[in-house]
Amino acid sequence: MKPYIFITRKLPDDVLSKIQETYEVSMWDKEDIPVPREILLKEASQADALLTMLSDSIDRDLLTSAKKLKVVANLAVGFDNIDIQTATELGIAVCNTPDVLTDTTADLTFSLLLATARRIVEAAEFVKNDQWKSWSPLLLAGHDVHHKTIGIVGMGKIGEAVAKRATGFEMDILYNNRTRKLEAEERLGVQYTPFEDLIKKSDFIVCLTPLTKETKNLFTREVFQQMKPSAIFVNAARGPVVNEQDLYEALVNGQIAGAGLDVFEVEPIRSSHPLLTLSNVVALPHIGSSSVETRMTMMKLCLDNISAVLERKTPKTLVNKDWQAAIR
Ligand code: NAP
Ligand code: GLV
Ligand code: GLV
Image (cartoon, rainbow, N blue to C red; front, side):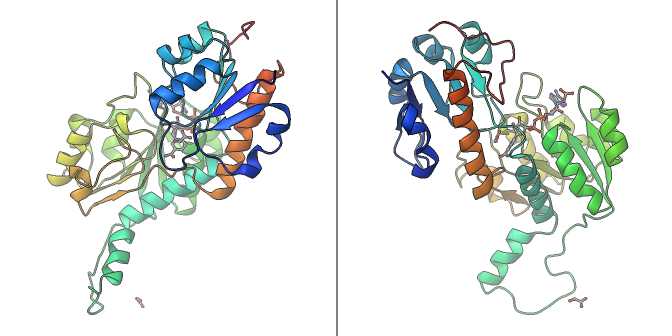
């Protein structure tokens, strides 16, 4: 019997043609609706491999009931939706899609920064809504980006790619990580800065950490209070790194000037959410890596990783490096 791969969202057929020669493959057939939990559990209990989305919760319950499962390939670099410890205990490989989405996500993050600073979305709507009556000196005047200070929290692959873009805008670049990156400091001219200093000095604070126990609720009222009143906060990491109620208050009370958000505590966010009522918030539907080229590459990488594990080889981009394949 061919090993069975279940894919939790509809992917384009041509991505699957090669893998279907070797494996039995089925897919949740809706593009815009996540697979219901009970179907996911049932499929996981029969599957040798799962190709998952960041919106699927691959928790202990699912993993322990998935007796044949050998690999979970997540269509994302982030893997906070997966219980890595349990997967490792059970001998299940977890793979993600780093590197291939770095530049695409950095482009989006910098676009979001520019859009928020220069009020691009508001201005475009202004024209389309026929509100433009005359040119005027301070019409939709925003904030400059060039020559300002950017503070990157989470200077990993995407953080570095954002820093590289910031050099073109002749920005001063501060960063914070748990570990200093001397080589990147040299190459990009970036400056390691303790978190407390970075939030005080930066005109743009850009979050690009993974979501972990340490980064959950990292940006709270106390943090926003220390930012400049002209500061713009950009989150392209994960929603729960921010306390959204505190962010809302900071924006309403003028403690900071604006926010560009690609991610939210609960996704999809609804238009009734207080943050979405503010004109100084630019909100996007978690599209950091969403260019056609990059998403196709991510899908192929997931399938390559699945094939590797099913052929008892080491996958290209493995999260749980201490994983030892269980005999299943
Ligand atoms: P990465 O290369 O692993 O970078 C993550 C960086 O965060 C590392 O440099 C890490 O350095 C730092 N970090 C971890 N914990 C930290 C903490 N407590 N305080 C400060 N820095 C910390 O990953 P990446 O490829 O750049 O991706 C980063 C994240 O972006 C992903 O995990 C994902 O959540 C998010 N993402 C979002 C989108 C989107 O669509 N919006 C797209 C892709 C990725 P240290 O270990 O030295 O601290
Ligand atoms: C997207 O958010 C990712 O983690 O790749
Ligand atoms: C604006 O269009 C200018 O010419 O300054």
